[in-house]
Structures are given as structure tokens and as C-alpha cells.
Length: 308
Image 1 (tube, one colour):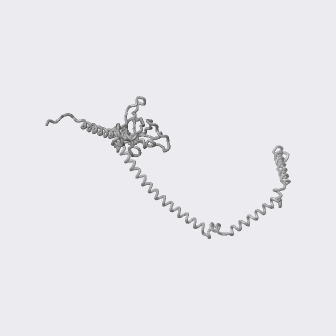
Image 2 (cartoon, one colour; image 1 turned 180 degrees about the vertical axis):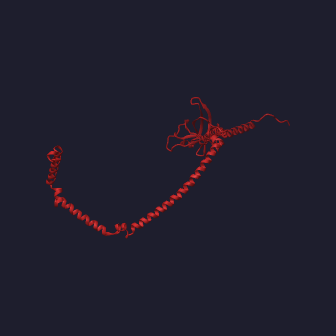
Image 3 (tube, rainbow, N blue to C red; image 1 turned 90 degrees about the vertical axis):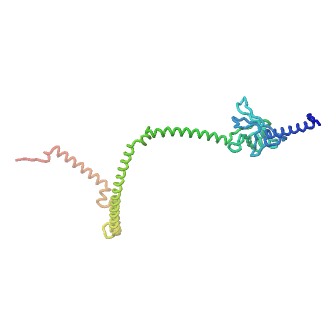
């Protein structure tokens, strides 16, 4: 019996259904981002200077949980940045507020890229549908850039060091001369020799100084012993109370004499306190001065000298 090559409608429907199911599965794998394609989602926009390998369909995470995926990536002609449109499940959209932030991160150091949404302050206004969200730099990318910059600086430093080292080996510059010229070594060796001699002389002088110091200490101890000996003159002055009593009595008598002089008693008191005596002495001195002056002026008046 001859078999018909015509495709039955029932078989065609089954094939269409299978193709549709396969297409839905493929679409979910590329655009669903691990979320159900039947779940309601809302859109947000983020503008990056570089997406670092982020692709359409890449997941959108929030606190380690996949909540959506990247819908589209294109250049923005106005800002000259890359506009990334992402989708987030409506059930978590209330956590995407106006102060939320987005950054591109990687799974591991070189893994697949994804958008990491950082929720804003609880109670802050919710981001509007298709609103723009603030972008921050990823720490891993920053670390790679800083590491690359550090490597470049190290390479430049290594080149400079190689050049300097070559000059030193060739004897160029002050450091090169220090390494290659034996004169410095000879001078340094001579200085060390002289320094050792100076140190030896210093040690010898130090020994003599210590000996002199010990002798001085011994003499001082003898002097202290002599001072503390009550039988000696100094010891008697320090420890004998008789001298103190005599000095005290002498001081009392002297005070009594001074009191009498101040009160005008006796000849000395009258001389110190009586102004008449002062006036008489002053008048006497004036007369004596006049007499001497007159004798000098008229010596014949007082002296008559005759040879015959």
C-alpha cells in the first residue's frame, strides 16, 4: 500500500505547539533571567560609562536574589553613555526607591556580569516606572583598574631603577663613584684607624680621670671626718655650744651699747645725737682753715726769722 506524503493537520498542530513551547523555553532562558516570564515586571534605566561585558538577558540581582534581567543595552546619543534598561519583578519593586543605586558586578573575579541593585532607604519614594537610577562603580572593577595602574607604575619604576643601577655600575654620578672608587674605601679605613686610636686614648684618659675622681672623693671624705671631729678647731666651732653662748652674750652687749648711743647716753651718744657738738666741730674746722690760709698768705705775720 502506498504511503501518503501529505502532512496531516493534527501532526502540524503538534509541531507548532512544540516549536512554540521550545521558543518560550528559549525566550525564558535568554530574557527571563531566572524569573518566570509570566510574572509582571517594571522597568528602570541606568546609564553606565562601560558595561564591562554585560549582555542582554543578564540577571538583575538584589541582595543576592535574582529579581529580574536586562532588557536592552544601547548607546545614548545625548549623554554618550550606555543606556541599560532592566526589568524587576513587581513584587520587589517597592524596594527600588529614588535613592537606590545600581552597579555592574561579576560572579567571582572573571565570571558573568550582572546588575546589582542596592535598595534605598525604607520609606523613601518608590522609583517611577522606567525611571533612571543612580549608578556607582563596582569595587572589583575599581580594584582591577587600580591594580593595572599600580603595575604600570611598578614597570616604570623598574625601568628607572635599571637605568640608575646601570649608571652606578658604570661609575657615573656620586653614588657610582662611591661604589667604584677605592679612594673612599682607603680614606674611610684611615678614618676608622684614627678613630680607634682616639678611642683608646680616651679610654686611657678616662681611667686616669676616674683615678683622680676617686682620690678627690677620698680627700673629701677625710675633710668630712675632720669637720665632724669634735676635738678639732672646726669641730669645736660646729659642735661646741660655748662659742654660741659667747657670741650671743657679745651680741647682747653690743645691742645695749648701740641702744645707749641712739638714746644719747654717754660721750658717744652725745656726739652722735647732740647737734651742738656737730656745729662746734664745724665752726672749729672753718677757723682752722682760715688760720692756715692766713699763714700761707702772710707768713711774716706769724714767723719772724732772723739770721743775725
